[in-house]
Image 1 (tube, rainbow, N blue to C red):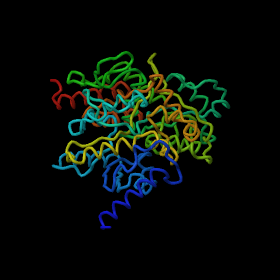
Image 2 (cartoon, rainbow, N blue to C red):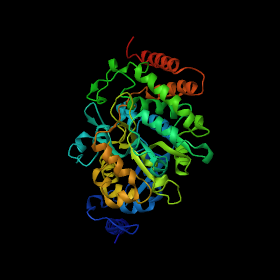
Image 3 (cartoon, one colour):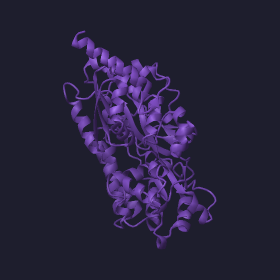
Image 4 (cartoon, rainbow, N blue to C red):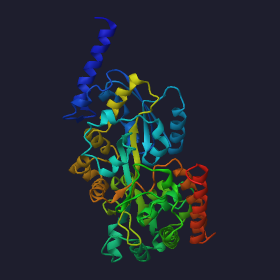
Length: 450
């Protein structure tokens, strides 16, 4: 037997074994994933979010399952963004698969491969509607969802009961009324944690809360209670910040300050998650993927005592939580001979079986209904079923952070103006007016209108 033949035989033996048993877990019905790589190498560049951290954790087993080598480059958000943009300028892509945050499609879509020829036969019925709609732009399927998750609202059921609060907050007014009863500095328990740090954290807070007031940040076309982001034209790019909803959001954020923990002006995603998990606040806004910090930790005071609702609404608007998170796409500058392999790997990584496996290792997110309703998954990850229920009720959307190239500039402006406002440097009205003026200047400079 030649060395080549011997090597191939070895690969086939590993594939057969891996398809049946990986890390002590049988994968029934996963024949479609058998030997997806067949001895080849696949290269992914992704973000340091839960699902990709899990892939790092079970990397060796993933390679055994795939029967090949998986080069996994995991970067912080800003570094990933920079590298994806730099890679798009290369003659030939250094990566087969890239991770894309839902709002980034507006910036990336010109250099992402249209997956429609392959994905048109892909069964999308198991995916939550908002998650699937988020990857379709100008009629093209640009990616497959793997970890899209919304920012939701978490509250301590035990603390609510002790304070005599019978129902979870459904509106902004409810949040403020409950905060008065829950705030307990003497016991080091603040009423609410939220992102108030200058820049992106607070900028996103404003946009997502603006959505809870029923208002998009730019002049998108209305579609019932929601907005169309599938086709955004230059006329849709005018900012819609300086209005009744915008001022109401600014006033709400200012009103939260007395009920927030010390250091709120520097609080971002990781800090609010940590403080809530350690019992430092009674309510918090949280990306659902971070809920495992308490749902999966029996030592947390919040363990077993947390329930979830969509973003509380304002000014009679419907409840809406903002969808963000990650999908897998293929760069257009990937050589044609590697594109089908990349597609096969994306299919495999987003199967029900693989998504269930991710939840066993700490990733409590799934855009698939079948995974979110799995009793074992729900036991591990209560937030998964809550999110699926919100999705089925139409309470999740992604228009709050529309996929336009200037989104990060908008976030930067809002994060600066609102931070000055909650710090006491300017009024809510002035902060909103200045944010509108600066974003309008950005859009005019980009040439959308004069």
